[in-house]
Image (cartoon, rainbow, N blue to C red):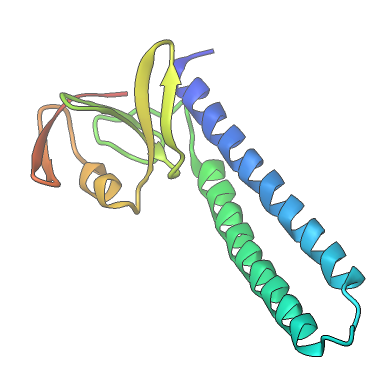
Length: 149
């Protein structure tokens, strides 16, 4: 398995774990809503239901975000290489290494650290379209692009 494939698979696992967690939250909240019965403490009951509804809405938003991440991953062609940084590129800089994909955070492959970042994130926007030898300035730091794979 090559490096890009390993990074891509780590991003897929990240999305699958998030999906599993959100599905568990939705399932447990649905069960809680069904088992919640009207008691003599009516206000307490209504507050409990309202809190569960808020949790369900939050989980729904997270589910939408996960769907969006899956769509982005589906667009990545790990066999494609280019001199310009694009969705699916590994960008090596003098400060850190980035995999332009989804915001999955810190990944370690073969004792080397990478940051999976979305192309719509602030650092992702700066890296997108750049070439080897160019520099970007982010959070007061200057990053020199050493390689794009």
